[in-house]
Length: 233
Ligand code: SF4
Image 1 (cartoon, rainbow, N blue to C red):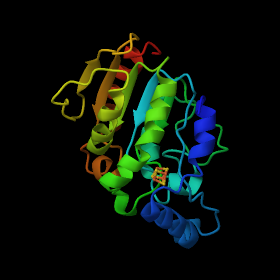
Image 2: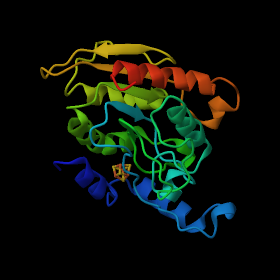
Image 3: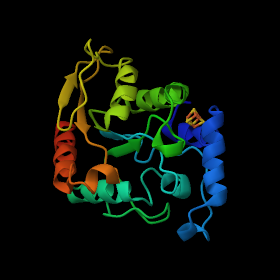
Image 4: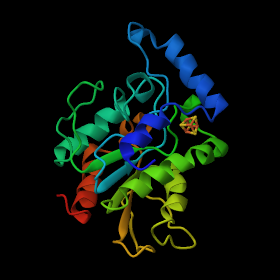
């Protein structure tokens, strides 16, 4: 796979994790009552955003009735409402809302992806499923390497999944830096290219946003810092 477009086309046919294939398709068949007249996507969800992105946003996995329904990362659920509103507020998205693939939303210099590309039961992929999906993330990051300068990681699962993958192009300290909201670590390149700064941000899930643990301003601050570090804000 030599382009992100090709990667995105191919990942949607992946069936490497039997439990996740069964779950994503079961959810797509049974649906949530409020979406019963819609066709669910029910497949792996590719990354979203331009192939020359300077900022990456890495979550956990698609939501059963969000991205697993709409086919686009963080689209059609409460987590996405928070994330896209923040991206728009800092000037990295064309609209504050994400409802479906034809809604006209564009990201400016940002690519959103996840270490597990199929919706897992209870939002909890197993370590084996994370490892199965790792080659997709590795290839995605390799293709983004020429332009990628910062990454915002949403939550500890994404942090633990991403850091080992970054070792292909950047020096990841041992022991690995710990996840925390607002932490930032600059990783020197091992391939002769520019460094990468990795930012931690609490996940934009309702668990965090409804309880006030994570506010819109906190998300905006991290995205703004990542955009500035990458030179696009
Ligand atoms: S989680 Fe990743 S590896 Fe597993 S089936 Fe989905 S796309 Fe394939």
